[in-house]
Every structure is written in C-alpha cells, then in structure tokens.
Image 1: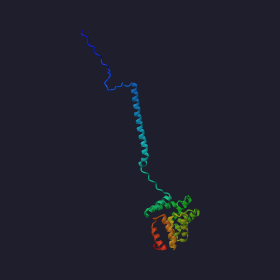
Image 2 (image 1 turned 180 degrees about the vertical axis):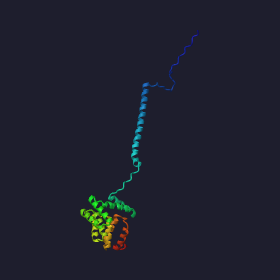
Image 3 (image 1 turned 90 degrees about the vertical axis):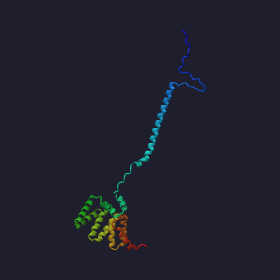
Image 4 (image 1 turned 60 degrees about the vertical axis):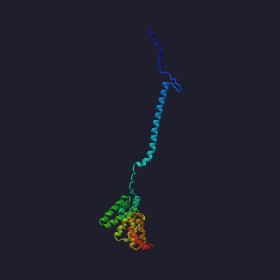
Length: 236
C-alpha cells in the first residue's frame, strides 16, 4: 500500500503574519460586556438629559406665554358713588348721562335708616296723590329726625318751591348742597332760583359746580354760557 504524504491540518484561526498588518487578539468576554453596559448607561444618561432640557425649556416658555393664553377678564362696572361720577364724567351726550344721573340720585335717596326711608316713601306717595299737606308733614318730620340727611332737605325744597314758598325753598336748597355738594340737581335748582331773584353771580357759581359734576346735565351748558355773558361780559 502506498502511504499518503503527511498533510498539515489547517489551524482554525491561522495567524496572519503579513508585514505591516497588526492583528490584535479579541478582547475577553467580560470586557466586551463592560463596554456594552457602559455604552447603554451613556445612552440612558443622554436621554434623561434631553428630557430634562425639554422640561426646562417648557418651564421657561410657559410663564411668558401664560398671560396671552386667555383674554383678560372684563372689569365689572363700578356702581359705587365714586364710580358712577367717574362714568358720568366720561359720557358724551345728555342721553348717555340720563341713566347714570338716575342711579346717582337713587344712591342719594338712601338714608341708611328704615324709619326715614319709610317716611320718604310715604311723602313721595302723598305728593303723587296731590296730598301736599300730608307730604309737608312727612318731609318736615324727616328733616327733624335726620337733619344731616341731605335728600330730606332736597325733597322738602322741591315741595316748598312747588307751593310757591320760595323763602323756605331757598333755605332748603342751600341746606341740601351744604350737606351734599355733589347733589348736582339741587345745585341747578338753587341756581335757577338765585337767577330768578337777580343773584346772577351766585347762580352762575352754582351752575358751574353742577356742570363740573355732570358735564351733560340737560340744557345746563347753554344756561352757563348765557349767564356768563351777562355776569362776565363777552370774552375778548
């Protein structure tokens, strides 16, 4: 039998020995695992950092955007006496002023006394019914019980003027505006009475006080203009 020549069995990982080529041995398994774990930790850290930066950016942007997110709530109307006078000063016509004047007069009528309010209600009913004698008694009772209540004097003054008792009406009108200088209606009524009796300078002063409070009181600007020419003459 012919014997086969000896043949070298190839090595499973033959070494490369070519010049200029450096071949490194593969790293141990433990080292590969450590590197993979390290890479995963870095990735997770970067992800957390991105989420953190995003949340921080949202916190910065939201406060700036919040004021514009919703329209501002409209302010509720101010129905206090000061608020109504401020609204009256902003009116542009007699028609605009009328409802505000009425609200102010309703506040002036409030006496903060149940007994006085009752007397005032009864007096108004008596005047409407034409029972002037009863109305007079009731209004005189009001000014006796509550002498510092301006509207008691005001209603008394109007009743006295209607009864042609101008002497007492003049005193009652003056008492009214002394107690309540913002009673523009009484200021005008006092001015009318003073003008009627020839006290034009005093009437003009009373008109101007009323006009400063109520710039669109019906017809008052014309009365002021006319009386000013009579008292102060034509402007040069």
